[in-house]
Each structure stands twice: as C-alpha cells, then as structure tokens.
Image (cartoon, rainbow, N blue to C red; front, side, top):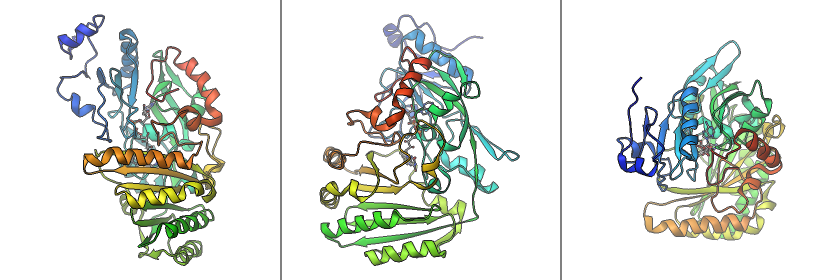
Length: 447
Ligand SMILES: Cc1cc2nc3c(=O)[nH]c(=O)nc-3n(C[C@H](O)[C@H](O)[C@H](O)COP(=O)(O)OP(=O)(O)OC[C@H]3O[C@@H](n4cnc5c(N)ncnc54)[C@H](O)[C@@H]3O)c2cc1C
C-alpha cells in the first residue's frame, strides 16, 4: 500500500533517518496541525514534532515503533484536559487517542467497554438512558482516559467510589510496542487504577463495572456574601465540619471565589430526605443563605455541571488532600486575603471519603482523605495572568499539603511523583522499568 508523506523537507532534514511516516501523522505546517495540538488550556502552546491520530491498537503499536526508530519521546493525549498539558510536549510524537472513543454497554453484565478518547458527556449519553452510571467527573469534555488512569472523582464517588475503582480490565501498548492485557498481567490493572497517566504505556481500551442511577437527582446551593476575612474563615471551618459528617450519597463542594462563597450540596436521593435537610439546616445556621432546592431528571441535572466547552486560559493546581479544617487552618487567613483581594482566584474544596476509602487494591494512594482542594485562576486580560499564577502557588505552598491529586497536577511541585503516588511509588517505578525500559513514554512529571 502506498503511504502518503505528511511532512516537509525542512523537518525531514532535522530527522534524516525518517523516510516516511504512517498515514494520518501530521507535523508543523501541515493542515490541521494547529487544531490538533490545541489543548483545553489555551494558555499552553506545545509543539510536538508529529501528531499521530490513532484509531486502533495496531496504529498505536506502529506509532510507538515509529517513535523508537526516530528517537522521539511519546506523549499521550485522550481528552486533552490536563491542567499542565502533559498530553503533549515539544518535539515529541503525540499519540492522539481522540478517535478511540468507542463506548459499548453490555446489558447482560452491566459493564462498559470504552476507548480512552471518549468524553464524559458522550459516556453519560450512553449510560444514563439505561439507568446506569460510571462514577466519574462532572465536566462533559474531559477524556475518560486521563480521568480514569489518575483516579476520577465526582458527584457519585462518595456513594460508589472512584472511576478507577470500577476499572476491571485494561489493554495497553507498552513502551516497547507490545500489547499487554491486564487479564494476563493483573499488576497492570493495579497500576492503571490511579498510576497510569502517560507513565509507561498507551492504554487503548478499558472495561468498567457500571452502577445503577436513580431517575431523580437532587441539589441545592448555598451562598454567603458581604463577609469579612475573619468571617470567611469561620464559614470555611463550619463547612468542613458539616461536610465531614455527610451521608455517602451526598457530595459537597466549597467554592470561595472573590467576595462570595458558594456551597453545592448534591444527593443521589432527593433533597427532601432527613439527612440532606439536616445538612441544609446546619449550613443555614452557619450563615449561608439557601437557594431553592432542585430535584430533576438525572440526565438533565448532571448537564448543569458539564462546564464550558473551552478552550480557555487558566492555571489550576491541586491544593492537596486534607483530613479536615486543621490541615488548611494555618493558610486560611492568607487564602481569604488573596481570594477576596484578587479577581479570578478561586479556592475550592470537594468532599471525597465514603466508598472511596473502601476501594480496591490500586496505585491510587490517597483513599484515607475525606477532602481535596483545588486552587484555580482564570483571567480575561493577559496582564492579570502572572500575578494570579503567583498567588496560586503562594496559597498552595502556605497550605503545605504533602499529598496531591495526580489529575490536578502542579508544575511547581518539588517531588511530584511522591505527592501523587505516595506509597505506590516504588511499585510504579518497578513497573515503569518493566513496561518502558527506555523511557520512551514521558512528560514533564512522568515516572
Ligand atoms: C474543566 C475540567 C474539569 C475537570 N473535572 C474533573 C472532575 O470532575 N473529576 C476529576 O477527577 N478530574 C477532573 N478534571 C481533571 C481531569 O481528570 C484530568 O485533567 C484528566 O487527566 C483529563 O483527562 P484527559 O484525557 O482529558 O486529558 P489528557 O490531557 O489527554 O491526559 C491527561 C494525562 O493522562 C495521560 N493519558 C491520557 N490518556 C492516556 C492513555 N490512554 N494512556 C496512557 N496515558 C494517558 C496523558 O499523557 C496525560 O498525562 C477536570 C479537568 C478540567 C480541565
């Protein structure tokens, strides 16, 4: 079969050993290159030497072999939502799995077989009409690949566990171009449950157990405004105390944005239940005013959290995992001062715990923590960018958490692998040597 050549003479001059690439590979200057390297975070502009848009395992094997031959690092992209763009790097061969977005629901076993490139919104479109869900994140555009391989939490995680806890089988092309199936190598499944992001292979297919979902989903928002910094700290403390006692079907988020604090409380049951109402009453007593509760058909309710289609410029990092308010106490005053004084800066804490604490044996190392923080910065004017980024890092360092979520990466962490993988790190490092001895698959924070 005749193969098309996709890159120009100037690039080939830099890579004299490459005579031709597989069909579908694109390089700088080719039509579609700039579109294909676009990440969700438009503040990032990374320029791989080639982008291989793979649709099958065989194409992934060929891409790895091509990269090995050409001595190129391999970066792996599913949904392109990584905060710091670790799915692409300058001069690499970027394997784009956006086309591997198959999603097959097996009614008899209630399992889902999915490609890494499927976006969460599309996944829910398949599962929700069948009364099923894969507990995962809330934003529709996030790729299942990156989300599940790093953990994956959301509105149903306290009730059912993380996305990676539902993973029962994976197939991966490793760094030497071999296809590995977790049925033959159970340690691969262990690793991909929280430790699989761009570290030692390209995951091409995943099988998940799904869960039943009720027809109605309840939610209520609470808001506080016009507070002082001292009052903001009291509200934060009160939320941690209330959220620490929630029943497992209830999720909560604390969102401190400028001069407003919003609390989201959601439930897989209805907002009229006694446990939900007790939490609402406690929030009101703490000083939050309640918005009207909603009990909507689940598919419609979840769409409210689908987020913007993007791309957009931002700088988000993990704020760390916490046991409770005591873990953020020393940084609370500084956080309140920065957030209230800087437009575009957000400090958010989400509830974990519940079923996550009982998850299966996995590389995900931070099950014991009931809370996770995220520090976010958004800007409309580029002139605000650098100060916001500095403020994010100042807050993160002031909190000083040691454990961080792999899917909320922070380029300024001193020991990212320890922070992300904790006690799983040694075993993951050993697997890296087994699956990718030449470190072909790599990015700025890979193992
Ligand atoms: C708007 C937004 C909302 C979010 N909401 C949530 C949320 O509700 N819950 C949550 O848990 N997280 C959330 N996240 C974080 C999200 O989980 C991570 O950004 C995740 O890594 C994105 O996956 P992706 O496939 O879209 O990203 P990508 O950027 O494509 O990949 C992320 C990382 O995974 C690696 N990777 C991707 N696919 C593969 C593969 N097939 N094989 C091997 N490595 C692979 C990449 O190399 C990269 O290192 C959100 C992020 C954003 C930007």
